[in-house]
Length: 494
Image 1: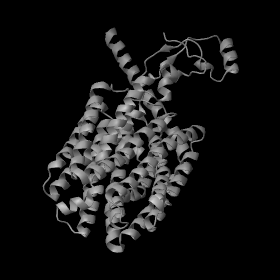
Image 2: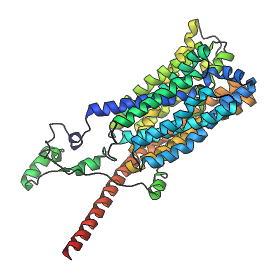
Image 3: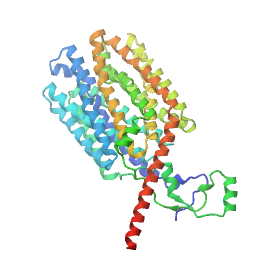
Image 4: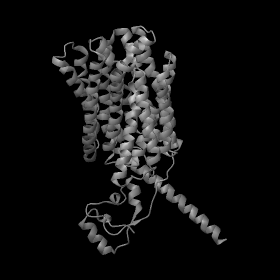
């Protein structure tokens, strides 16, 4: 027998995973993700130095280093997310995360020794495995560690890790690269990623799938029968009367399995489709920041690589702050009224595009370039409100056994945008020049904002459907157990 819930506690609280282990797990996941994503944009701060090393013209630099290299990174990462997402719904995710990291970060480490552009191209493509594969694994794990009322909070930590990792990588590359060569940053980011992935493998236990679903908790609590009079009186006095009294842990587990029927069903969920759709235009402006912005400030605005990297770092700091604010505010808005959150995400995304038109088109940023740094900071805050919330929404509208695969699709769309975004911008640059091309690229955030706002019309019904899917999975499992018991009783009677 377990203790009865204390005043204000629910059935979920009785079974809550201890806070300290969860905090340690989230810290390890965050640190590993930080260094995984740090290698994503090590090229950008030293693009001109790499171009000189490989004897490239300015046009070749933009196309081969800014466009094709980014495209290769995500062409491999995109299918990797699908494959890893598929196995995330079937295999031990902690072990799978370790091997995914090792397969992706090994080539990143080997980049230090490349001699030709095509060697660099091949290794950067292989490095995409780690970035593409980690997302479905990490969010599948967190979906089974945290409930729907907490997921935006933890998603903000993971999103900070990705955004801060990108900024950290650019900071390392922009400061270490000019002094010690553009190759060393690849070692400084890959070794810590492999180290923390190894610590995760040794320390973190695999969480039970579906452990944080409300219906699973409800069925895990059995209470002794009460008299009808007492039951009626208690029910009238408290709407949460069923939470009172001694409880017995039935150790109900959720063992529903992923199959192609469920995969097709989840790809028809309207909220999923809108989340996937907004990812394509939403990643194009990020392609400018990740692949071109440092070199743009260096070449077109006359700033040093270190000063230009500082602007990207300020954007990263704003992004981290915006992610925290977005996770906290977004979770509270979601808990009060789900349909309000998509409208808020769309609004902040549109606002995040506006500062770009200042720092792209103004030549005099004022004393100490204060105008540049302020607008980068503001853009970072508003553009980063959405990511933790949109990922938490994906967790909340998909049942546990499908989340790895759904996040695999999401990561694939995201990777297509991240890879095709810089390539598309490269095409714009060839036809209209850098400044006009970058202005056009940031306008894609307005289309993204409209698609995000449309989720307000679908989220309530899709969350309710997810709860029905979990209940259906539990009922199917109960029916199978009953059939097995009847078969066993029949055999024993013979």
